[in-house]
Image 1 (spheres, rainbow, N blue to C red):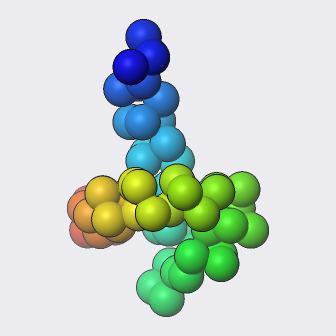
Image 2 (image 1 turned 90 degrees about the vertical axis):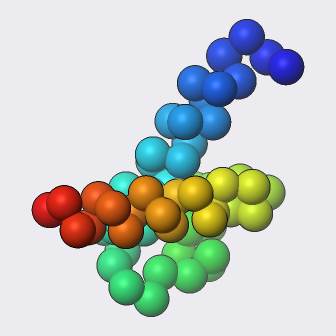
Length: 60
């Protein structure tokens, strides 16, 4: 594992969640790809990012 692997993962999830929140309901994988995320990142982190985006939206 990389020394900063966890930090990088957390940052990616947070950035993806923020992108999802900005795009809004109906955000698709294609929308995230257009925002600069790789398909592999979406596969790995999409579920966690979706959960975080939902929490962020409810907190706003």
